[in-house]
Structures are given as structure tokens and as C-alpha cells.
Image (cartoon, rainbow, N blue to C red; front, side):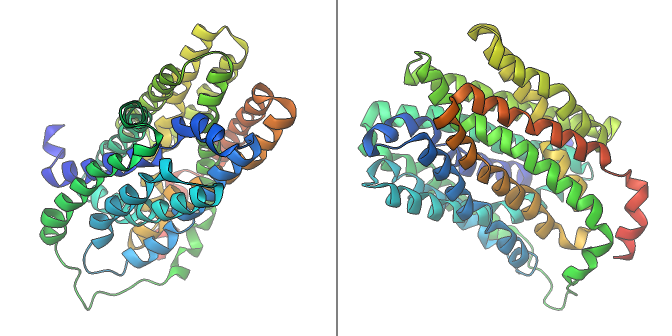
Length: 388
């Protein structure tokens, strides 16, 4: 396995670890921000949805541009942008300022992912394993974000979150100084394949997209409301932050396991298994006593996130000439639509309570199961992809 983990992949994974730690930075701060800015659960859910506009829905644009850039400058400057704006959350004087900071930080996240995902998948012939390693780095960073945020606030207070910018600035400097200059320039006369060439593979691409939306809605929803759910049940901020990080950590390891497993049994089987096995575990969290229920939720995160790298690689294989664009759709736009569903979940929580809202959110896993089982075998679209 070490033969496939190159220094180039290691640096990309480090960048992914750093930038994704900022993506989950604000979740454990929500209880403090709710008190400071007097926010309702509807506003909290809407905040997550609006924040996704900056990162997820701008990602296809960055993916389109990345397929046409000579050098991966987005990879170098993405962490810097995310770090500077995300670290200012504690200083936000209003809800509007909070939304603006999240939107601007999201642009850095959006710029980084499409280029980095393609470069990571090209580092080894075992694309699923390389992508799993790259995504695991990001999901571990995502899991570390809450601990990082709680640590900064515990040491410096909510007004001292600006200190959190330091790791992102250092990571961006390293990427800019070494990686961007070491990457070969794209040949100036290289032929560009038009986007209409994706038409023959639209059916499997659409099904992958819908499956990713389903998984993302559940993942984002529980990440957003779990600290509030646990706080309402009497858990302290630090303890709820640790539980959230465990939930995200197991998702990270699930992604790596899924990438390893898909090289052996196929990506479609991993995708189907992730929905089929995770749904009962998420429901168990809502009906069992805390200790057992939280254990089921953490295991459910491992199972559900096992399909994360699989989706991206399956999409890239549909049309390699549009790898950045497809990666941005499956890593950005699909996640964004999933996050948009969190607004209605927050409104439902205000009217029916968090347990009912999380139960409704978990039902989305059954939709994901439908899309996964409708996905055709690779041999069914390989010819169309080649002709495209």
C-alpha cells in the first residue's frame, strides 16, 4: 500500500485535512452563537443552507475552470481563503455577518476540492485507494474541526477564534511554495472536450448525484443538530464536541475502508451496502438509550460514509476528460443540495422537536438506497462513456 501513497498524494491529503477542518469548525460553536445572536433553530438550519451556497454551488464553476487551467492555483490558495474568513466567526456582530463570513470561507473550500480530487486520483493506478486516502485525510480534518474549535474557544474565548487561521495560512504557504510549482503545466494546445459529451452518461451520473445528495443531507443534518440535541439532553459543550468528532472520525475511517473494499468487490456494491446497513443504525440512535444509541450513530457514520470516495471515482470514470467538473458536481453541488434540506429540518425541529426532525431526516436514507440500486453496471455505460 505504501507504494501507492506518494509524497504528492501526501501533500494533497494534508491540504485536504487542513481545509476540511475549517468546514466543520462552526458546528460546535452553534450553541454559543445561538445565545450570542439569539438564533432560532430555523435560523440555524437556514445558516447551514446559506453557507452551502458559497462552497457547494460555486464548486462546479471552479471545476469547470480547473479543467482549463495550466496550473493548480486553486489548490494553493483555497486553504488560505477558508482559514482567514472561517476564523472570524466568533467576531461576527450579527446573523448577516455570520452568513457573509461562511459564504466567503466557502469559496476557498470550493476552489480547492475539484482540482485536488483529480490530482489525487492521478497519483496511483489504484484510483479508489488513492481517492480513499485523499478523502480520508479530509474527513479526519472534518472530524478534528469541532475539537479544534472547542480548543480555541476554551483557550481564547469566542472573540479569539481569529487564532484558528494560523494552520490554514501555513498549509497554503507550503502548497504554494512546493506543490504548485512542481506540478507540470497543462499543454497550451491541449484539446478541450465540450460539456455536451457528457450526454451519453447522464443517467448514471444523475443517479450518482441523487445518491450523494441523500447521503449528504443526512450527514450534514446530524453534524449540524447533534451538538444542539446533546446539549438539550444535558451534555456539556466539550463533551458534545468530542461525540461529534467521534461521529466524524468514524465517517473518515469508513471512507477509507470503502475505497479499499471497492477495489475488491466493486463500487456499486459498496454504495448499496452503505445505505442498506446505515439506515437501521441511524434509527436506533433515536430510540435507544443514550450510550447504546450514540454507539449506533457512530457506527452508522462509518457505514454511510464508506461510499464517499466510491461516488467520486465512479463519476470520474464516466468521462475522464471532465474529471474536475464531475468531481465538483459530486463533491460540491450534490453536497450543497443536501445541505439545503437542513433548513426545512430546522423548521420542523422548531415545531415538532429535534427527535422528530432527525427521524424525518433519516428517512432520506431510503431514497439513497433507491438511487443506489438503480445505478447500472459499469459495463452498461462503458461504451457510451468511451464514445462521449
